[in-house]
Length: 501
Image (cartoon, rainbow, N blue to C red; front, side, top):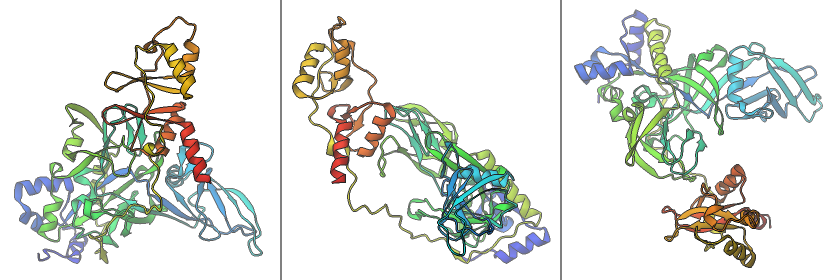
């Protein structure tokens, strides 16, 4: 397909004040009304925007030399550790690093926001001391104006699409996709849909190394494909850079994802030149043509089950169908801010304050994303659980359970119905407390709200449940709710013992 217009032709229109710019929302309506051919002829640039938590973000900082000099071995900013293994007084602060004193309430993303806001930051560093850099420790305060370079450098931003998330478990879980309620109680998603930058140019015909972008309220650049760039599954990413000193805290916000960790909300927008009809066709797709998968995050494995395919039109409606019920949907990113960013870039271009840059190298379209190579498979619950489980019925007596505990020397008794489905659990402690109270049946003392494990989940996930809920054992159930075994803290301790040996 021949190029309809060049970057230089568009930039000349910007200089002359004749450029025609539409946001991605506006161009979709334009194409519906007038068609692709007219869009290429009449529209020069389409602006996009997104504003969401981009965990793979961070900043390079240079503090200048102290007197006497110090070669920083470890460094903390507001009690958040930054990476200092590069040079004497350089450090990289990552958005997800947690404060050593405040935990998940404050992290690297908050430090970056506070720097941009001009706040005073406490700097603490330790060192081993050398002949030329004898200092072993320093404590001081800095602002963004005190340091030499402050460069936002984000290894992975602006996912082309995010998977939507839900949860099949009987308990609430806390993930990077937010809080997910039990039994498919809600759905969360991220991304700006029709305004999402990489969705507007999914063939990467205009986006690559050297593309000028909106980043955090200033102008920045794409410098490489992002980490985990996976174009084959429509999950492209970009690595971006910009001058933190020029940025606006409105478009860089530190955040805490409840019970998961800290991150940084990043405002990012990419202007897309309509260089040919193919780009015009993709940039004008409506949200009912942009699809992603709804995954079950209740399964703690890399390859989570796909519940169904959904469109962004469905997700942004606020509710979708999961199974036979209607489920509320909530976004983790701000469409309002994404729209604001697209409008801001549009105004910058119209006022001649932002020119397009032709990429020196386009994003690759053939990258294969590989999982981590593991020399040994992580143990699953089925590998360490006690099976078959000794069970009892709700009508069995407490004295019957006491005999089982004494004879078989175990502490957790799942209570099941006639078909083997889990109804509750009784521990040896429950029985010891109940003896002499006049209670007779296990149904009178069993715990009905039971935390369970599945055979296919990692042992580490089961260990986390034991710790979170302060229990010593979990019934192991299959997808049908049938009890397959029991995993206890003792089983996990034995596994750890074998690992140590």
